[in-house]
Length: 256
Length: 256
DNA sequence: AGCTGTGAATGACTTCACAGCG
DNA sequence: CGCTGTGAAGTCATTCACAGCT
Image (tube, rainbow over all chains, first blue to last red; front, side, top):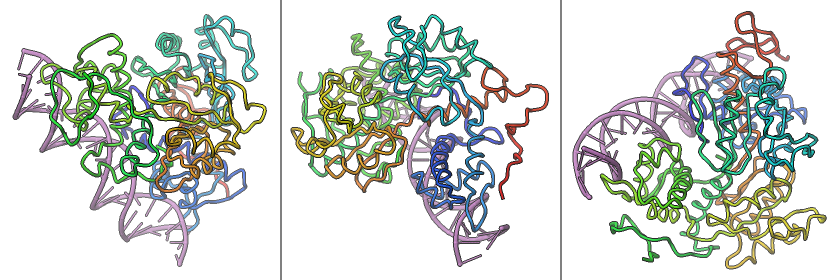
């Protein structure tokens, strides 16, 4: 999901591919790449769907937005599909990316093999801490954030258009502003903040604690039924002025 | 989402809250917490929506699933809402969590403040590398994966039900199996693999490279229209450079 | 007057089920 | 016959717009 600002109404244009489908293409691509490495020549929608963890009707529908790349009675040619999906995602190009904020997370990202193997190339690692500058991380020197604009603009061949923010929350918006000002138009944000960006700039966010909270929600439900492994209950916060009519079940712990 | 197996048809019974709403509650909670720290007593749906990066109609609809916690003509009581959302998400409890795989990413997670400040407590850090065991990360000792089952089962008061997998891809499924076998029922997976789990276990995945790929997709589109900064740009006014087929027509690579 | 809460309308996504091709 | 590709149906989510409370 994420906080992407803009995004046309949906399947607006002719070749408009639904967002939900776009979000699954990388999944298919990974499954296909694995098959390709095992020299599997073709797959059926059923097999590929299983490998990608979706159902086959969805997968076929997704592929139908790309075109008719399968063969009835047979399935899909693995290599060909890899190419088609890569192209659709824009991975037949090389995307230079900068990572700003080289803490543990930034370092993890820099070391993450999944980038290079797809179309991404780390153009620079940037950190505000002078003590970091010059250090090697993942084989690249960390550069000081004073150089940010220069790096974004001058990276060959056409500058950098994708930035990754892995800074502390407080630094995220200023860094974002500078990235955008310098020409970045897509941002992947790991800082727990809502970034505001001008029209035309895409933001996706990855929030570690949000995912855990969603899990907790479901976990709580299970516990409600099972009464199994449960956590420790704490006291709640205060309470407001007015009493609210019970709407099903309500509080319990409500200290003044 | 993830490979999460189950999840009732949806807003199944009475207190059924739509998935999409659940996914936004943490967002609201964060915005509210910030307001709370600034001692703001009340907010309107409009203000809160802006702070959380959604539109106000959506926010009001979301809150309506929780109950009627606002005051017409006034807005929402910040403290009260914080409490209600926390409770709904299960964050008034303390959830012990284990992190498996203490590389850069695992360390980043261990150091991430957002966990403790919400209801999560890191019960243990686990790694398969004997060279890691005993080392301190984020103030906690890394424990060897031989102890995994024991940790999951014996962590007071009722064992651990949430596990985070930050291992290399190859180790993820085996680790997952062991976690589940030992009693974990919710998993947050950072490894780029589709995990298969039995009914009743929830999996959410966070995939760093997938997010980038989605950005690349949109970025590519922009380039198609604007011809701005980017990777290897195609000619804006002339003929497209052949290598990457432009939108619309099918390339020439078709295997036998 | 202002702002919430919510039915009703619209839109997006998923699933069904089967026609049609290899 | 097997499997893709896709209209049609069904489900879920967002947005509209306004009644109703404070």
